[in-house]
Picture (cartoon, helix red, strand yellow):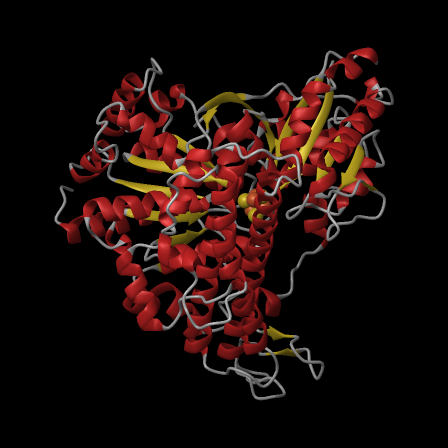
Length: 635
Ligand code: MSK
């Protein structure tokens, strides 16, 4: 029973320890929730007004309408729109923080030097800003002005971040559907308005509004956040490190960064090095920083910080008894961390005004005082090290070597060794000739309903075997990293023959002396924008709509509203998007049909739900082959 919780041996080990230590984990709480509410699972429960809650009887023997007359179709569509709007809101809020940081940095008001003037110029040029003769700070302020212009746009013009970055053919499709966002805050507000009592009762109109929220997420959330963060902290380049809880070290102060935003964690990485002598003074060999979820991915991509683990095992990190401090920022943070920390010596530290957890220590983070906050946090970790109980320590000895840092720029850099003039040509040529059958992006979370990591790993094995190149972000990237799919050995072991030959050739040309990994780690959840950029660049290079490309996406174990909003954006890009966990929509036949079939006619993409990994892989390959056929490419 214990071992079906996860395929990750470190997690399996620690689940046993958790039981021995009397710790309740996410899996125990999931068991206590059984059976989960059928109405909620189908999406047919409405709590939008306080005449309710109303529930529709899915068996057709009870009520078929809510008190106001809303049908199952309306309730399901409204609920979905709210979920996707919430996911988009999380990313837009993240992006807004990053814009503010760039503004203050450019004004010299905070100690965050602009790390990547080249990226700044590239972003400026994409927005039509001339950078000739301008100092980075001045140019950054012009870029910031455009971002704020989008955030505060009160005209009916499309957001510039959308019109500047989306594939041309897509813009035409979205315009014809009337779904190009004007201003992210306005669109999110409108979605809340549209779904409140007595508003939109047309499921089709509600789903088009949902697609618009996908675009809000894709451009005002993901793309904007990545652009700002790359300018501030640098565009990722290949780094080599390790993944899994075995990266924690018994004789070091272990400090885990968890959440999504790199604004504080970048400082923590820096101060962990600087304050290492203080750790030595208390008997440790130094400070080991490791990452969970997407803050982990951010500092991995730019600083080579090792990955500790992904979403579902966050509690187990503390169960090692070796984590001296865990610092959290926003999103995907289980409140249970506080209770579990109290059973060990771990200092749980919250930092954001909108994420406080009773029992945790709150060290307020403000950009102006980031260095002070980072120092305080590192010192708290060093202080906690002295309180560590060696009898409670168990670090499972599992870690896999990983090569990460594959921004689009880094991929182009590696390919450019084969064709410096047209770096995308080697990739495009190998897709066209069928050596690479297609590209699948695996993204998103773990979900307690699925054995941890199994869907990511088993599905990707099948894809690689069939010569499909995989790019990954988020907790999917963590899962594939832990499973040894992000190193050169992974290529030899998992890639089909033609894919292997391509990865060997690129690896040799790039001077790795070994093949490129078969799964390219492209970053955090917001870095799904990098995948969007790659798709857009490929579409432009081949002169086709992104909907026509032999490319698909998958969230094998999605849990968060953000996974739904990212998936919706991918569908709006015309991409078939697989979900390995059924979202709460089955209560409406009409909505389910529109999401999985009907949308394709108008938008090109669709959701594809399959809960068995091999079948999902084969389904995606079939979809890719159909697209190849339509393009007249070799099969
Ligand atoms: S952290 S949103 S569990 S990917 Fe980005 Fe992982 Fe999903 Fe959170």
